[in-house]
Every structure is written in C-alpha cells, then in structure tokens.
Image (tube, rainbow, N blue to C red; front, side, top):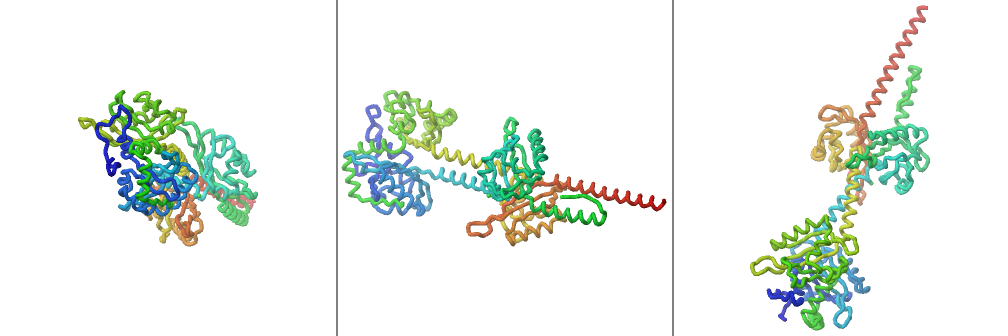
Length: 607
C-alpha cells in the first residue's frame, strides 16, 4: 500500500469479471460526485477519512480535516453551527441516521449548501464505533427552493393583505365557499374556518331585505355566466348589517365548463351611510322647496482530528480492500458502475442500497443489463435515455432528476449523477460510475409549493379588480408602484410597465376635476397612515372616462415603520352611468312637475 492510497488511480487491468478489486471500491468512493467520510461515532467526533472530492466541493485540502482541529467548525456558517451540533449529538446518542442540510463558507468567499447524511456502522469487532457519511452539494436546489418560497410569499401577501375579501365559490345554488381571504374575519367577525365549514353561510347571512333579489340575481348569473356585480348587506357576527360591493367572474376549464366564481367583496358601509345622509338631506330640501321628490343612495459540529487516532482506525480496518468495501456499500446512497458496452462476462456493480431505495435485490437489478431502463417512469424515460447516450458518447458527466417505479408500485424520485471512470484502448468512454440519492421528500415539497404558488397567482391575477403595491413617497402627485396586476392594462388601455416605470403617469391620467381631491386624499393618507378610500375618474389615452373605486391600507414592517401601501381598485363605471341616468330622469321629472303646476295656476286665474 502506498503512503497515501486515497490518491492512487485504478489501473487499466482491473479484474471486472473475477470480482471487485480494491481499486474499484476505492474508485467508487473517490470518483462519485459526492464526498464520503468516516468519523468516530462520538459526540466530539474525529475525522478518520475524508475523500479527495472535498478539495473541489469545499476548496480545502482533505488532509486538513484530519490534521487541523478547527478546519470544519470554522467554515460552517455561524447561523447553522448549533443546529448541526444538535443533529450530530442526537444521532450519536440514539444510534440513528443523521440527515441535515447546512451552509459552508468556502475559502474563496463563496457559500454553498451541503446535504450531510451519515449512519453508524460496525467495525470488525462488531462495535458501532464508526459513523460513515456522504455529503452532496445541494446549492442549486436550495436556491430554487428559496425562489419558490419568496414567490409564494409575494403572492400570498398580495391576496391576503388586500383591504377587501377575496373569495372563490362553487357555481351552485348555495354559493359554497372554496376559499376566502383572512380579511373576512375583520369584516364580519367570522373566522375563515367557520366560513369554509358552513357551505351556505353566505345565503344565511344575507340581509332579509336583500335576500330575494340577490338570490334571484345569483341564479341568473349562474345560468348565464355573465360577470357578477352587486351591492347588498350581510349580517355580521355581532348582528350589525355590513354593506358590500361584490364583483366576480366565472372561471371555466379548458373545455368551457364552469369551475368556480372568483371575486372580491369591498366593504362600503361608511359610503352607504354617507349616501343615506346625503339622500335624507336632499329629500328634506326638496320637500321644503318642491313639497315632493324621492330618494337616492393579508453544530456546532466540532470535529477534533488526531493523526494517532486515524492510524489506529486504519490498523483496525487492516486492509484497503475492507476499508473501501465498507465505504462503497454502507454510504446512505446507491453507488454503481455503468458499462458503455455491456458484456455478459462483466460483473456489473450496484451497491446493496438499491434494495432500500427501490425494493430490488442486487441480483434482481442485474437480471438483465437494461432492466434499470424498464423501471424509469414512462414520462421521464426518453429524457433520461437521451442523457445516458450523450454521456456514453462524449464522456460528459451525467446528472438527472427523474422517477423510478418502486417494486412495491409507488414512485421514487432520485438525483442520479455519474462521471467518466475509464476509457477503452481507442480513447472512447468505457466505464462510468455514479451515485443515486432519494430526493422524493424534496420533490413532494416542491410540488406542494408549486401548487400554492399557482393558486395564489391565479387568485391575484384573475379577480375582477386591479391590485397594486405602492411605496410611500413624499410627493403626493407621484405613485411609486412596485406592482400592478395585469387587469390594469384592460381597464386603462396601457401596459402595466408604464405605471411602474413612470411615477407621475397615473396622476396625469386622473380627471382634472377630480385630481385636486385625489391628491389631497393621497397626501393625507401618507401623512396619517389612515386608509385611502376614494372614487374618481381616470381619462384613458383613447379619451374614454373610467370611474374607479380605489382603496388601500398601509402595511408596516417589523419595526412598525411604513413599508408599502397595498390596494385594490374596482371599475365602477357601469354603476356610475346608471346613477347618472337616474339623476337625469329625476331632473326631467322635476322640470315636468313644475310645468304642470304652472299650467294649472293659469287655468285657475282664467276662471
């Protein structure tokens, strides 16, 4: 044995047909795209062996882990040290598997995420005095996970912080609630859980005076699929009536069948109260003047390394063959040798961990050379085989995430990575060796996150209203919009990028007669932190006038300071047009009434 057998390469005469050599086991350990190690199985462990791949992964000479006591603990991210230490201590004390992910600070200033898996193994005397492990670089997966989590958080914030009730209901007679935002509790005093558990709660809470016309309209909209826009009252948990402006649209599947109603309820109780007072004042004035008229209304894992202890363990292992066999077959992952040109006389190698991963024994897995391909999920088979052929032809590394069909029938996700191990006499790729790791839990977590992200994205981008995020500014004539939902393009006739890139663009679109009032209200909200709630007109670039009802609330950061305004804007043009028509009819009626009274007076004088 050489002075440092970990850096020897297997020769070209490896006896593949007559059993696996020390060179093969050593290659399986030192060439797989991961770092294998052996520590003492104790709370303050000592490193006995670290594979050469540590140099590429961590940027550190592997020998430093076995000669310098603080090499490892100094490089573990400070925020993760206690977690790593606790996980290792628990695994040693209970004799269980240690599986943890943490950050490592490389000497070049970079930080990587490492997945570290280790298990207790027996030495030749049968004592569980060793702990063997394998470390993988999972930085890319962690970055993807963090991006998905951030995206989900943004969309969840947009949906759950809107100063209105966002809902999704079934297109049935009871208007059964499928999802509702947390703001329902602030508006009506009922928790989301109560709202979801009682299918017909919306029907039960309709004000008696509004129930019949609203239910009739609800049946009509269910039948026609026309957009929903109504004002009505619901009875809150304390018995008080609360006015809402409710707008919604029917979502359909790819075949056009109704799926659900998606909408938003904006509380307008205060507005209705003001309207009622104004109507009463107007009625009183008209009674006194005309005597008639009507009404309007969101490880510290310390590794102490001693040269003497490493040599003692090497003597106990006695031979390189025993040492590398232990490493290759006991690491918590599947290692294998992959022959480019299969030969029936070759002894294909797959570690016994294949039975733990996929339920097949090594003999079953080797029953024919292409058996592994038949167990790949049909949806992944073409992609994986194409990548396999590419690596066999070029010698490039193989790295794929895909699904296997377990012997028991269920699906197992694996991360499969392999590198070129040996070329033939003509220099063509002959053997590759690799490692497979079970990543099923991570894939399931990603699936759940993707589902949550898609659900929140659908909610925020399909409700019949514009949602926006505005950063507070000193100039009330500017709107520093960080986000505007896609509905803005349909309502305003310009791309959403115009509003986010030009802070004063939206202010210029406000109708001249409404601009002073809106700017004043915006300045007052910025100064006091009180909600912004205004109805006003916007002039589109094509000259059309759109009436908006815009409401926003201030979201504060962890320190209590203002962070951003979160708002929703509804297009109420149709309602305003109806109100204008009613006022025009009332004016005609008053004019006609005056004329009739004048004619009657002239007749009386003539008699």
